[in-house]
Image: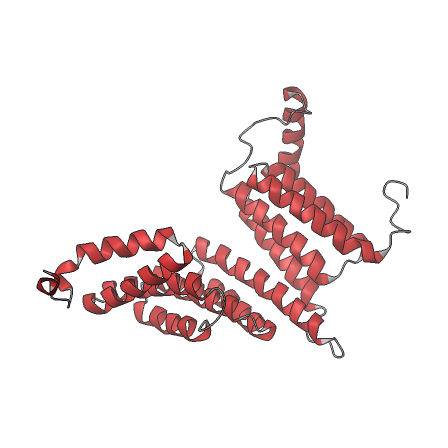
Length: 285
C-alpha cells in the first residue's frame, strides 16, 4: 500500500495499529520525549479520523495525546535535548515550527483533546442494539476520559466542572461494572471537597468509596487512600481519636498494597498524636 493510501487498509488492522502507536507514545512519555509523543498521537488522531476508527480506539489515542499535552504544560519535556538522528540546528528549526503551530496553553490543548474524544464517543453512547460488551467498553472509555477531564479542572481550581466530570465518570464506570474505578473516582471527588475545605462533604464521598470497593482486587490500594483522606478530614475537624483510627486503617492497607506515601503519612500522624492513643502503654511492659 503506497504511503498515505488508506483506501485498501483493512479496518480490522486499525485497532492494532493504533494500540502499537499508543504504546510507543507512552514509552516516549516515560523517557521524557514529550514532543515525540505529541507528534505520534497527532498523527494517530489523523489516521483514526480518516479511517473512522472505533470510538474506543480513537478515544484512547486522544487520551494519551491529552496526557502528553499535560506533561508539556508541566514542563516535563526533552528540555532542549536532541534525538540522535537530528542535528541541533535541524531540531531547533523543527521545535520552532512546532511552537508556532501549537497554542501556548497546553492545558487548553489537553481539555480540547478530551472533549473531542468524548464527543466522538457520545455519538455512539446509548445506541440501540449495541452488544453488551461494546456498551461496557464504550462506558469504560468515557469514564476514563471524564475522570481525566475532572482532574484537569481540579488542578485549575474549577471545582464545579471537576465534580461534574468526575460524577459523570462514576456513572460510566458503574455501567462498566468496575467497582475499583468507581471507588477510586469517589476518592477523587472527596479530594476536590478537601481542597475546598468541605470536610464533611468529603467524608460522605469517602464512605461511598469504602462501600463500593469491598472485595475488589485493588481493595487495599484504593482503601489506603480512602482512609488517609478520611484521617486528614477528621484531623481538620479536630476529631483526633477518630483520625487516628482512620490512619491506623490507612497504614494497614498502605502496607498491604505498597503505598509508601500513605504509610509515611500515617506513621507520622500516629507518632505525633501518640498521647491521644487509647492503648495503655503499660500493658506492654
